[in-house]
Amino acid sequence: MSDLIADNVNMVFNTHSGGSVHALKDVSFTLKQGELLSVLGPSGCGKTTLLNIIAGFIRPTGGELILGGEEIDGPGVNRGMVFQQGALFEWLTVAENIDFGLRMKKADKAESSRKVEEWLDIVGLQGFGDTPTYQLSGGMQQRIALARCLINDPDLILMDEPLGALDALTREKMQTLVLKIWKETGKTIMIITHSVEEALLLGERLFVMAPRPGRIHKEYKLPFAEQGLIDDPRDIKKTQEFSETREEILSMIWDMEEEIMGKTDVA
Image 1 (cartoon, rainbow, N blue to C red):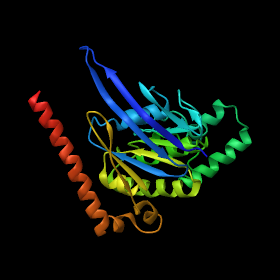
Image 2 (image 1 turned 180 degrees about the horizontal axis):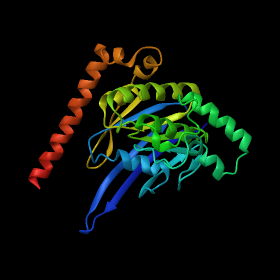
Image 3 (image 1 turned 90 degrees about the vertical axis):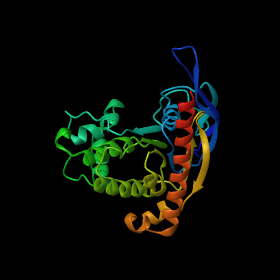
């Protein structure tokens, strides 16, 4: 099983003034294979730092992370990353972007072409394989980024504000696509977002993180991701349970922001 285990993860950054910032303190959790986790919190709570540690971009100053029984000590093929801006090669075609990782691994060309067509179909880009990437909209480019990540068959998919730069309508469509991919592939997905509504919809588990030091403040187990596979997300967002949970989390984050501002004012 490719479970992700975080065991007392700490991250301390040294400042130029000789001080230090405790970005993460004693973060522990287990994310089981196939689970969908969203992470939410005010700026400075360490959510992106946590994602970067899991991706292997930085190493924690304390604790450890285990994926599939092996310690994470750097980037690896068992993790795939989707960024806010896609990080695509805009001068390449859609197909060339999607199979970039396969070409780097010198995979069989016929098999790669078959996989590209399969993923073009899954993300709704049939017929766009030969199109230059720069000609496509932001939403279509994020579909390419998803396909490029998933075609490499990672155990864990990490998404850092993947839909943050999209307009509201495109964002809703992409949320539905993420749910579809999660259910059809059985992949483990961890999503960082600033949007409370998005975190509620795209997480069967949701961590609300608190700042100074960054830590998991509260965990929610939610029904909305499963509901979103059947019902219109816009209808789900109108339900009493969704509205009450959204208001509770908004109030929680508002209080955290007020506390941060208070500390800043005193300082």
